[in-house]
Length: 177
Image (cartoon, rainbow, N blue to C red):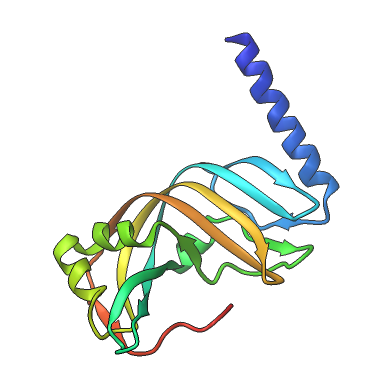
């Protein structure tokens, strides 16, 4: 038990030193998330801990030559204002950026969790380019990285529950790298 506590303490100290030595500055975030790794060379980090998020969940679909959806490409949560305040955003340093959305995966499983399997199958093989729904998402891990010379935020969800509100099927996709 003492060895485990010592090792956890060393990991915390090493993580704190790595963050303190880097030019990255974090916005305040929820105490439920604990920094478990930080790579100053790539400016990437991993946080662990269960945290409930709320926002609008968007699913983008891949299409065949006839314009019919054939697969779920991406799942992204656009967090509400209160949720954004509880997530670790990089506010200064390399590629500092606010959290506009959080990538989630695997998208097929999340669509099914949010809407039920029958509705997920119907929508992911229909004419829409994307679907969005208000949702409550519980995460177990939050990741911060750089991709395409941009800051990205991603999470591993444990559960997704559809909140009250409409399911919106859109013909236009979200744009971006």
